Image (cartoon, rainbow, N blue to C red; front, side, top):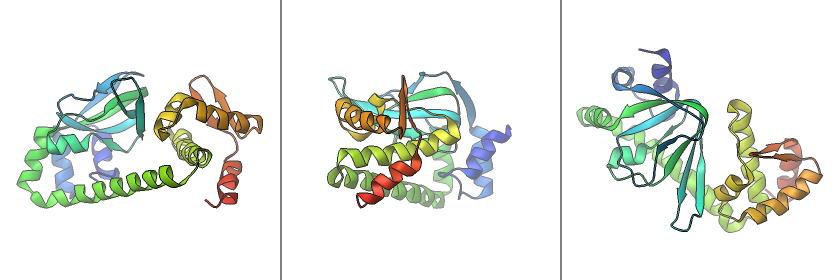
Length: 225
């Protein structure tokens, strides 16, 4: 059994609090999967056959409407999991997952997971904790959308992304930044243009890089955030 499989189960959020014997059972049925940059892991509407943990690289989770407009839910980085909701309820995938950079994943088959949970129902409580954290985070994003101007929302998102990029080099371009906030690319471009002139950030093809974290943090502090 590769150590990376057990480490992902031991150290990461979804299964971290599981008893050791449950982690070992999951490790035995799990497999690793390698994806190239831009490879689709699953699409909206696909049947759910597993949940995934990110070992290396990153995975961008998004949704798209019939007109081609899409929303970026976020980037799953090493140590994080995705696809667990449909893996549990059996409903079709509600988002699309795409590898960002060379990515390796841990795949936990849905059938094996459900068999373990059905045999040991007490384990379901650990998923409740995860879903409560997700709901709190979703509530925070909704509040920011309702109460904050676009410039402050962009600053917060860039600071979040900067932490991810520092650890895992997962990039976010202007279009994806706009999609993660539910605003237009033009709105993002206007704000970034000023910050680029001030040398707070650097904008290149395929990436927006934070150069001065303290400047963005001061911008939020002075504006009451």
